[in-house]
Image 1 (spheres, rainbow, N blue to C red):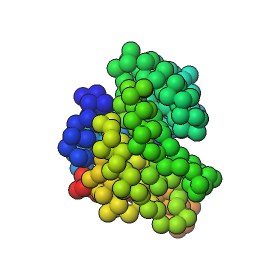
Image 2 (cartoon, rainbow, N blue to C red):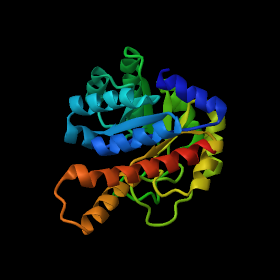
Image 3 (cartoon, rainbow, N blue to C red):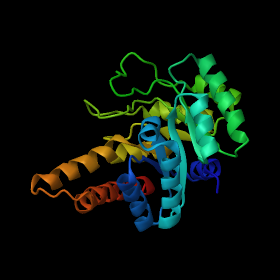
Image 4 (tube, one colour):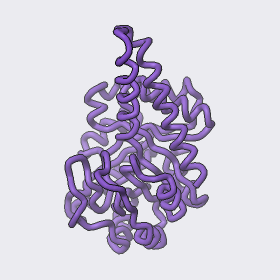
Length: 273
């Protein structure tokens, strides 16, 4: 099943799917082990930073090979593509889905760039995600930046034909300095205005009950990144506290298992919504 069709199915069922970023073999393995254990689908995401770190060809091959080996229903997705060139490279490499993020540009520019990407992706039968509104990235502050408005969302999807739309309703990328609060009323308004599957970025640190409420009101895709790499590193640091082991094949499995445990918890949270 193509991801765009899966997202439509989830929207009709008022369900959601976890989209988890991976950074190396260990985090990739942890995500897919968890999905395999629970027999649940998952989206594997690669950011541009991870692509630069591993190289596009290696990261793509790792992801696609691991999906086959673990026997999981999964898709490979570009997270926060910053340019049409990057989107094109990922589509050529065989990605199932791409995100073009022109959210910090004007609405008209965002529409123009996104519609161009949608036209390109159609030739690959690939899904396209875009972002509308301001979802704070690391180092940015959400205050005084507008959330996504229903009328803008309607104009955006009508003029782009995008398959999934990430919206700004109070989440942020990275760690939260204070307890996050999603604007569920606004989410519901947007969901009732457009039929496009909606995406929540910045789920790390959002309470489980709030995640479930977001899903009940239209969110179909939950992005998880910061919490995964933080979980891996904390477990690795803890393992290295008590020994002088230099064999990474001995110390990495504990950190990988911590990722498995985290992803299983997230998958259960999402699928109990």
